[in-house]
Image 1 (cartoon, one colour):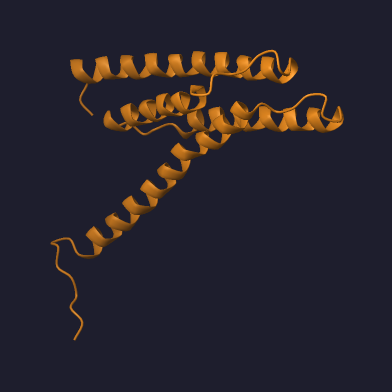
Image 2 (cartoon, rainbow, N blue to C red):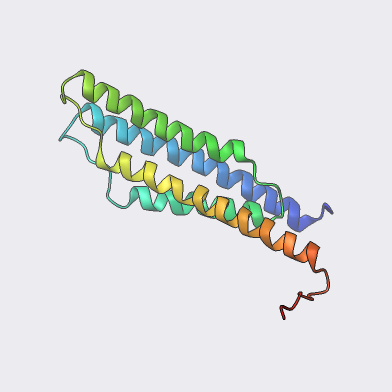
Length: 146
């Protein structure tokens, strides 16, 4: 891969977008945790989980556009972090006999965070499938059935 000005600027934008995703994650998680601890006093805005996933999808798309190998570790850490936090909240809810309850926005965020990964898995399967077809028939010829 050539190192030119466009790719350097793209990497800088990608790194900035990742930092923004981390900041957004921390703030949204803090808001979900506050709603969890202080039931009925605070509510995470309804659109926040959806916007968060769009931001995350944008980051993934920028990474792919730069033709870089998307680091699974980064995305998987986001996903695992959210789902682990939700699991802890469910355990606390159970242990305190529903004194606390898992915020709806927390559940929405966790479920929506699966979308990029499901789409990514589907994309990789289709890419491998197309690559095998291209390898088997490099000039676009297919075997005809008679």
